[in-house]
Length: 323
Length: 259
Image (cartoon, rainbow over the protein chains, first blue to last red):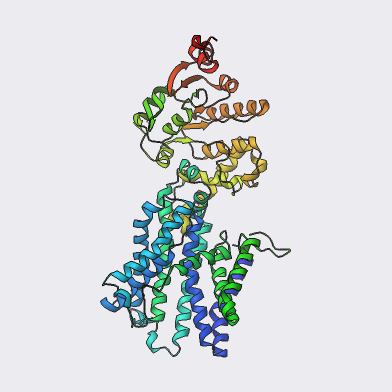
């Protein structure tokens, strides 16, 4: 690890954990605090989508896993009195298990076929949530209590969110810390042999299997990690808005996660984070254009994809080395 | 000499088409055996059957006495039977050295979690892989282009890279898919030498090939197939004199249309 990289990480942590919250607190922009939290959460979910891109699959079904994660966490908290902190990993695990079952058959598909199947997954998720009684049908689950205290041997690690002075700030820290953990994990994954193997799948699955890579196993593993991220993001999201409905993660959201990855750059592990930030903020800023918001937004997207097909992170200023 | 690979009555049917029909032969340990045949004879199908990329309709392939047909390709690779592809099948966007390093996958003693956490074993593995990759690249004359992106390599080097990837898996039997296709005379001579050296490392080589001259030069034994059936087997000398083979390649007199 180069010094430059460590320095970059330190600066990033400083900005995310100290600077941003302090500025937002000082300016008292509560809405921006929520926007920042959403960006952090969405980039966790998008990171999952990115990993499926990394093994050469177009994934437009992440909304389904975010929804599943949200419901699992909500049901555990509301119906079974489970602590939020336990429900969070359980939601991720539930998504991982579901994705293994779904992934085993569908990951044999490639290209547009896989994309189409995943697209329908989001819709299947929505309809299931509407039909089942466990999920509360169309009314969803409301009044999810905020996360309680997390204690280990009487030591309070995280205070009860209900007693927090500034609930939004609490959620911001929760989302950002999860995002940092998620991307640190992704970074490590991509830079270890696992990332090598994922790239080998992306480039040629037949050749990969001829050198002894268990292609099926690896694909499913990557998809499970991807869905785990989706589930975690969805669970925290449900907790923040204190409710979850069948329509919380519609198809547009699934498409958005894919766009975040495209915009940031599919070859860069931090691509989805940057893409989410830019696209999410961009959409919000374009709000001032009123009825032209969508038009301008789409035009900018098309231009970006035309001229920066490898994403924002592929931009190299003069004098910068390729990573 | 012992038998490395045994092909026993292997048959592959695609719907109404009998691509390979009841073909049997044996590959001796550390020999170079070629499978040849005219276009559409079923060579490629046979090749895929042996490397387990296709499941036979009937018959079986034995490696050291154990049946390997029906297993998945990565399991067969683990056992020691590894195939190469024609030149376009490489990891195109990786550099040459990484292409070879990743092919060391089977030699890893650390698990994926070990690699994720960068355990001691994983560090040792990575170091070993790098050294072995450098050795293989040097062996095949690729050391100068080790940092080149594979996509930019010239034809001859691509073929060598394919073989390097195969060698990196530490195979006992290496199956080469048309290693001399599209090469000029000089390149072929070099490649023939390369395949011989691979065998001298103690690897059994089975190749499927079109280029007759090269095949005659390199093979110890040759199996000829036509219309999915084995029509001859023997030394290059015997094959060259075999009437059935000459007929398959040049065609026979056809009295009905008067030629």
